[in-house]
Amino acid sequence: RPPMPPPAPRAAAGRRRRMPRQGAEPLAGEAARPEGASAAAASAAASAAAEPVAEQAKHYIPDWRFLLTDPLEGLKVIDQIEEECWAATLEFFRDEKFRTAIFKGGITEEELKGKVIKSFNFPPSQFQLHIQWLVPPLTPFQHFMAEIRNHFHEDRAFPIAYVRKVLELNKPYKVCKDTPIEEIVAYYDGLGINYKQHWNEFYQKSLADSMQLANWRPEDFEYVVEDGKAYNFSVEGGQVVKGAQVEGFVASDVQKLDCAAIQNYGRPYDGGGRPSGTYVQTPLKPKLGPGGYEAWPGVFSD
Image 1: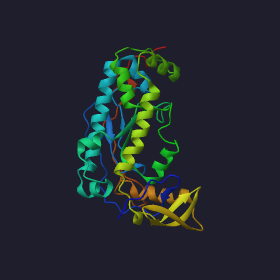
Image 2 (image 1 turned 180 degrees about the horizontal axis):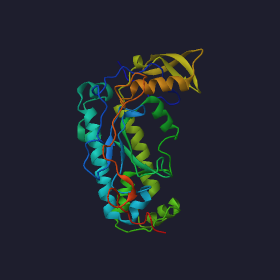
Image 3 (image 1 turned 45 degrees about the horizontal axis):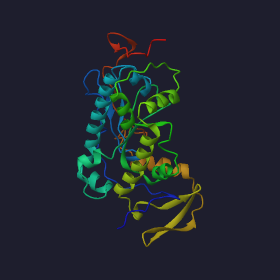
Image 4 (image 1 turned 60 degrees about the vertical axis):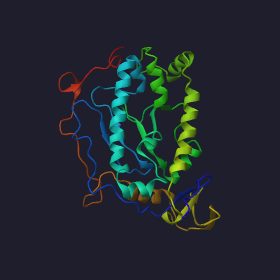
C-alpha cells in the first residue's frame, strides 16, 4: 500500500487515523521528575508522531535570549530539556505497534534522534522557556502548513543547533526583556554563527525528514482538502486525484475531531470526554528563593 504522496498543494484530512495508542494511561513525566528538573511529558500529538512538552522548572527564564547571559549554564539547561524530551519520545518509539504504524522503514533510535525537529520560538508562545520538539513525520495538514512556510517561521524559529553554536562561543550577552532579537542575531552573525544559514538548513531538513518517515496510507483518510473545501479522492500512479466536492464539510470541525482521535494526551478521557492527567505534586511557589525559583542572570535586573 503506497504511502500518501506529499500533500502540497493540498492537505489530506478526514477520517481519524486508526493508530495504536501508547498504553491506556496518560504519560506523567512531571510527577516523578527530580526536584528542579525540567518538566517533560509526551503525547502522540495532532501535529507530529510525538510532541513532548518541556519547560525549565528550576529557574524562571522567559525565553531563549536569556540563556546568553550565562552561556555555559545555558547549554546545561538545553542538555537537560533535550534529555527529558528524548526519554519521553522513547516511550512511544519502543512500542512496536506505534513504531511500525507511524514510521516508514526500519529506523533506529539514533537515526530518529537525529531527525527530531527542535527549536525555540521568539517571541515565545508561553511565558517560560520551552522547546518546540516535534518527532517526524508531521501529519499531512501540518506538513502542508510547513511547505507553505506557515510553520517553523523564519526569524521566529531558532533551531537548537543554532542556539547551541551561539552558546558554545561562551560570549555572554547582556539581555533585558526589551532586547531586540535582530540585535542579537546581528551580533552573533558577526562572530561567524549565521542565523539565516542555520534556519534554512533546519527548515529543509525538517521537510525532508518528515517526507522520508511518513507512513500514511490512502485508507487512513476520507478526503483531501483544498482552499478549505473537501473532496473525495483516489490514488492513481502514486498521485492523489481529486474527485467530487463533499457538501456540508467544515474543515475546522474535522480537524478538531482528528486531533482528539490522534492525540494520546490526557487519556483515558473522563466521563465528559475531556482529557485527564496528572500534575506536579510539589510545584515551585511563584517567588525567588527557598521553595520557589532560583534567580537566572539578567532576568530580574534592569
